[in-house]
Image 1 (cartoon, rainbow, N blue to C red):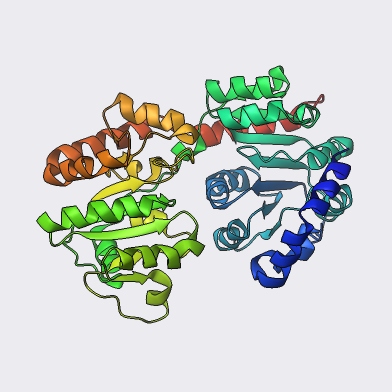
Image 2 (cartoon, rainbow, N blue to C red; image 1 turned 120 degrees about the vertical axis):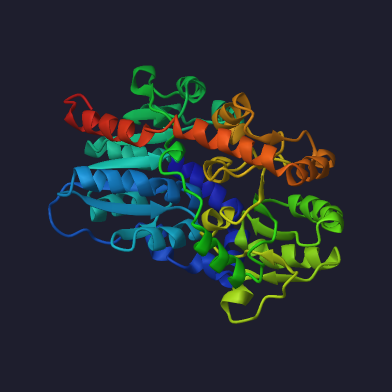
Length: 423
């Protein structure tokens, strides 16, 4: 049934995909792997297949994979990603492991990939349950476990209208981040006694603020003075960069040393973001230009159009704005800058990070604004009151440290699943 649905959808959208294949190398790249041509795994060791949809999930897998390999050095581990940027980050993050694109969810491609990889078990980060894949795993007796599971309210409504309950019932375990996500998983069709709460792995292995020497070196590379105050806008979506540029213009009138670093969620938007900065009256430089040898001006807006740099850049921030929250995107990861003790600002749309939002709010460790008009006064207050801002950042950091341990619980749950004769 799903093959027929996919083929009909492919026929309808065929003009788009043909144009994408002709004009966009990102869709041609690794096409063979998308058609099921995963690397053939040699030997007969047991194998853990870990899949993350995109950059965030791939980075989240790092700590889990490291813990599994330490506990099970006799296992092979392979990594897959769905998006091209996720694949790129996975290759950088796991240089000694087989990394490949997730196969398209048509039965011939799924079965080919499973024959080549021969996994003992499959771990899906957060969700990514594709019907043909999980059913093919069930037929082979390969357990499929969702870890760090989450289902947004929007997704739950969408699943209610789609014939996916059978696929969800094929999932061996759903290890949820929170009680809220666990309840949604049951409502969506995951078998109730296979759903449990193990916590949020994003609270494990959160980054620490880099040492002063490393911060100074990075700032110098970006053309920023070591003692400058820096507003970092990370994981931003249109039009959040415009909101930040407007606020920056007002703030810099009182703080001439203030610098702005914009890190759009999708790096391919870098040129558009730099153009928006120029139209707002600022000189702008993209990080790809700096990496290519161009000297950064000393007062330019820096637009980071590279992958995997945001964690490091949070360390530079005097104040951190986390994007996807003043647009209906559901928010981005507020925990990384908060774990470094940075004063964090975000908007009202935090559906994807409700648990972290609630935790930071409970300790008065963040600044949440209701709309873009409230952004400027909130930022001004944090820059004007550095002691209060630092105290809020420290409260957030301590709260996050107290919630760690989900990775170990997920490892234990996966080991229990593999021992179970009824898996």
